[in-house]
Length: 376
Image 1 (tube, rainbow, N blue to C red):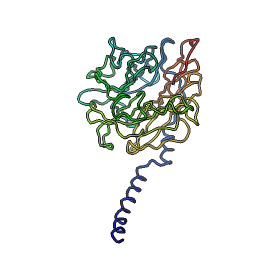
Image 2: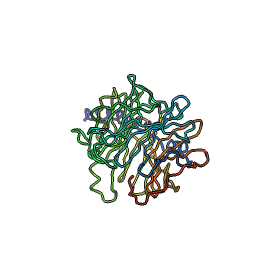
Image 3: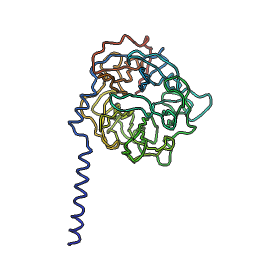
């Protein structure tokens, strides 16, 4: 009995210490509200990038800076699949197309018909430089690639590309010959065994995960066929690396997800000791359409989900159907929330909302097509 009591007394400080640690790490509701007040953008400036014709759709903006100029990588879908493009701007509102970064392949590779890229290792400091950082003399870009023709068709896997040249100049990036992750890997998780999608790679400077680099990615998995309330499930999970070349999955379960629908396209910003993960949701039980939201964390692993109003949701003719897929930054006291805008005719472009009224964009989609089909 004395021995049992001794063990219990030894165990109590451990449990108490763990509870205090968990409380200290948790992002409080007050802090979540403070983040919302900081990042909200009630003023929709409107479209800033649109396709040249209705055979193309724009998607997934990623914005970075070099010196006094801004750059955006984004995707164009033309019926065959995704390619990755580059544009530039002096003021974050007017953009000029510069050219391609990853194009379709002439030969049948694992990523021949899909190359959807996202810049890696950016300065994620809120209101910071937003510059891209090198690792081993290279700039990096993770992407999802595919071997099928059509909208996100065929096998979709996550790959890595890099360049030793300037990433703000349009040129073809070098890609790894094989993907980092596929939906058929021996260690694939239940929630990602169908298709893998967007990935965001950041440097874990404090080694909170025990590794140098962290990847957040969303994927489609098993439960999609078992629930009639949604046509699609996606969840956000993690991977880690110490060299940007060799990666491994981190945890068995997703780190941000919801009971039904899509939870995807994570983009990270750091506000002091709190990391903010911007993501989009779609086809949830209690929210209509597609919209942008956020979660927050102190350790990059355990995320507190915002339960209040959407950051971005459909409200204008240019984003009537979907308003989703975030890239959020702060520059000279103004918050810019770039997102994918889809109207009722299924035309898809890139829009921005701001924390300050900057007027209205005059840019519009070209004349709408006659027949369309919705895709998130």
